[in-house]
Image 1 (tube, rainbow, N blue to C red):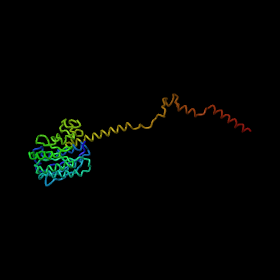
Image 2: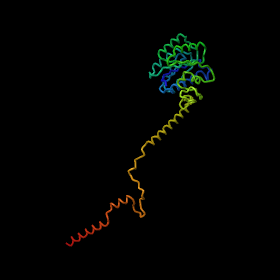
Image 3: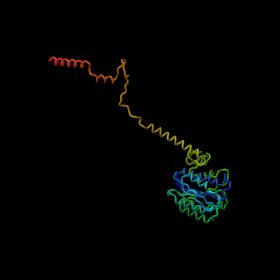
Length: 309
């Protein structure tokens, strides 16, 4: 999978308060940010994602490149909706954030959400596109909300001038009953990462996991983190149990008893005396009674002779 460093630029201008997208333009962006983070980090665990805004008084970097999903969520919750957008400045700042990435082998990509009017003129955008292309930075646009012909034309011109080997895409998403993230996942921006639409669609999954949504265990951790955690813990416990069983099978079963012969005879015979090899050994050690008596007599005779002498 592609190793990437991705900066997500969200539109937190006043236009993001509009409710023409479910549930609102801002909430739709937040859901899409969660989806993009999950897609990038699951495609390659070493990929990192950052977050910044381009509304208000000026662009602001909320989270530098990270693999910690909690920091992304915290950045989204800290964002305030205000002011107007600064598209060109936001892209330039995102490019600087990518330039200072720790892993230089990561490809650089910027994903920009725009739902308000673009103030920059077409000439300035063309210059910016060529500069980003020279720095090997791919830029994807997610255009929704304010889709006036003037806006879409500027984005199309920008996209034509930045297209390169790694691919820069433009997704124009119009209002509808579907969530912004569900529509986004069918576009080339995320389809290259093998993410399937949520809800059990069987298309778009690079691994052929129909209905799994391209997520581990078939569950999107951003929508149901408790279920995803429970499934992961269950899998780890089962894996630990299997490893324990394998180790117990491979372990030696104590000292071998092959050198000790088995005794098939009973310990005592019918007369209550020891039987088998043990009894034979005892008989061998015991002196013969007749020889002992003869020796005793001879010894006794010699003693008598010595006394009479």
